[in-house]
Amino acid sequence: MKTNKLCGKCRQPVEKETKLDYPYYCPHCDENLYEFETVQEATRKVIRREIYSAEEAAHSVELYAFMQENGFCDVYDFFQSDPDILRIKNSEVSFTEVDINENTTFVIYNDSEYQATESEIKTMLQRFYSDNFKYYFTKSDCSWSVFRRLVNGIAYRGGKGYHYAIWEHKD
Image (cartoon, rainbow, N blue to C red):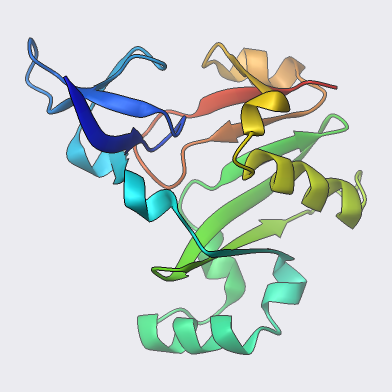
């Protein structure tokens, strides 16, 4: 049975689970989900999404106000829980989503290896967050060994659940 929810990992529609003690099932991930592992379809309709390096984000007045209101002291506090991971040119860049309000999301990345340019990182993230991201990415097996073999890809959980969806970039 269809719902108005999306899987928090793969962003595909979920169904109501009818056999097991879970409220939802994602046929794309082949995984049962709790409520907190899903998002409302309407919440994915972000009007504005900004992609910033951690250094750029630290200078955002809008983000600073959000941090003050919500008890964050530093931009790097957003990376304390398991962030999502962009694999680009065989190096890894952590990134996370911060919902400033219902219409604005900041995607903040932290590149400590400096193997890719800022432009390459932002392009890859823009493609991932585009409406036609499946044009650029293919879902892979959800395993860290698969992810580590990718030259370019994304391990994504969107701040939800415990398992990452692995998306390989179509180079």
